[in-house]
Image (cartoon, rainbow, N blue to C red; front, side, top):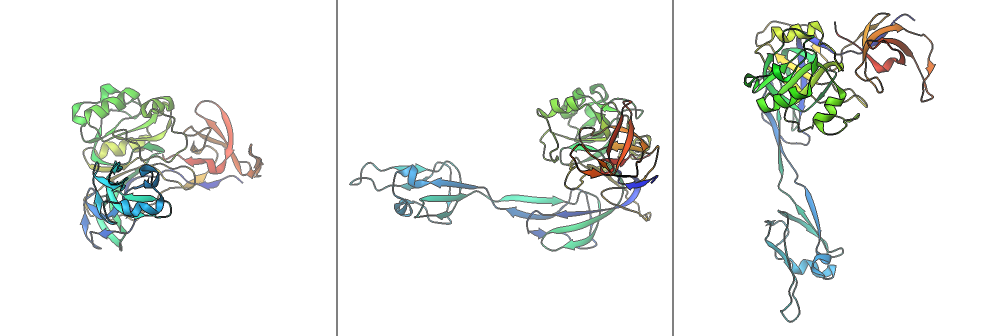
Amino acid sequence: MAHAYTPGLQVKARTRYRARRLLPIAGEVLVQQGDRIQAEQVIARTQQPGSVTPLNLSNILGTPPSEVPRCLLKKGGEFVEVGEPLARTNGIFGFFKTTYQATVAGVIESVSNVTGQLILRGDPVPVEVKAFATGTVAEVIPDEGCIVEATATFIQGIFGIGGEQYGEIKVVVDRPDQDLTAASLSPECKGKVVVGGRRIHRDAVTRAIEAGAVALIAGGIDDEDLKQILGYDLGVAITGTETLGLTLIITEGFGDIAMADHTFHLFQTRQGAAAAVNGATQIRAGVLRPEIVIPWLDDAPVAETASRVGGGVLEIGTPVRLIRDPYFGILGEVAALPSEPQVLGSGSKARVLEVNTQQGERVTVPRANVEIVSE
């Protein structure tokens, strides 16, 4: 067999972008079908139950569990402040009473006369979901959220860290093979989605945080730099909840890899446009890629709809990216497509392909471990 189908990242100059924007639990939807909405507009909100704090008052007060309910100075459902007396023993002849003062605030949710344990429930946590893309509400999902539809430039990255951010596109290098260094950044990057070319240097991340940039985008990053930036080895975890101070997205892979010409040109043409970015990435158990969405504000029609993963035909010479350890982020070209399944190191059988990497190595990997690189 000379070719096969495999997914790839999407890079679209103008496409119909659709996103499901949902609350984690049921709540209030604030928009209606057909509404025109802005990227940072809250479209749904709810209250997530507060954290639970169990208190074993039987042990704390030194009294039998059956006596605990009679020791309470507050009733079920009442709120307790930090430092406020919560329970007190009767003592002996009115003396030697033991008083417990709350160390956390919350509402008394329950108390057991069997275990002597009291449950305090903290304040509800407000949760809001934003539209993410300036567009139109295509469909309302009752009590959950909505589907947002927008005409946008849509670019997927290979890897990212950090959550949703919003800002104008600012390209700070002239060519896609220029590194993104601290010298590339200025105070004008405050509030901007900063786009470089090749590798993001560690000092550039520090400088970007100081300058107030909301996101950094470039072709590659050194994995050791990433480890130093985060302070730990990320491994294969799902990303998106990091508290780095900005969102970081790489479009090509790990190492000194220039951004694809087509991708870089798109960023240049959308210079100054408002964008929404999300660095959340998941490689295993379902694919989730970092995204850059730059809405168009005109009404020009488009026929294609952006999906989470693109695709194409694998042939000899097709540029690909390896997306599983131990070769994650490495680029190369398809060198061979053996037709028969082969035994892998794990002992299982799978259809494979051979790749000539840019490092000059020829590797054999399962076909599911590659994706086509956008031209």
